Each structure stands twice: as C-alpha cells, then as structure tokens.
Length: 160
Image (cartoon, rainbow, N blue to C red; front, side):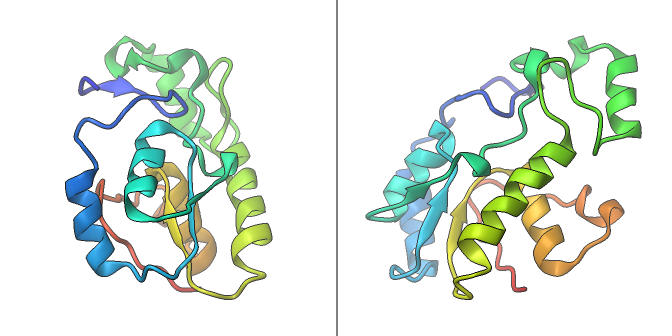
C-alpha cells in the first residue's frame, strides 16, 4: 500500500509476508488463548499464521472512511478533514462511519465476547479499534485515547 493513502475498511493486503512476524509473536502469546480478529485480509493473514483457529468478527474491522477510502490524504478537502477533526465522534466521511459508530460496534464486541468471559484473549485488529479497546479497558478520556499509537505487528498488553 502506498504511503499517504487513506484506508480503513478497504480489504488491502499486508505489505510483508506475515510469517516472520507471526513466529516472533507466537513466542510471546500463549497458544491456548482465544484469538479474535478483524476479517480484513491484513489482519486475517496474520491471525491465521499465529493461531490454529482464530475467530473473525466484523466489529473488529477498521473505521470505514467511505468516499475517502484509497484516496491520498492530500487529495481530501481540507474543510472535510477539519470538520472530522472538530467532531470526530459524530462526523462521518461521505458514505463512511463516524468514530462514534466505530466506538459502538467495538463496545458491543467487548460486551459480548470479552467482558463476560473475564479471561485473557488476543485481538488481531487495527489501530482505530485498539484505541477504543484501550479507552474502554483503561477508562481513558477521549483526548488521551484518540492520540494513542500502536505499531504494526507488535503486542500491546491491556488490562481492565
């Protein structure tokens, strides 16, 4: 994927073969833990390389940027980007979803699959989803979680 492109819900592939990353992650992650993954290829390929039976959940997909998908960020009107920055929880790109909608679906996933089990699990998902997971589990204010960064192919441990 070319740098500088907006992509969220687009089903783009990984830039690299996930095997090397998976070998490294398998040394860190307990094999017995349930693994939940976004169904998008870039997560699915890594999840399958890490775990024998990952479970896929659409609620773990990245934010849908609608008409902005696969466009260069520099080609998106400054006024639109400013509107999104001013109201990220409610503003949705044309044909896309707001961060508030992403929040709702990630929360539904956590409430259904993670919180009732009260056991550790592994998530293979996207940075936008991970920000919300961190906010929910750590009780972070919006100003803090919106700015979180998660490196690709790394383990981040979170506790409720």
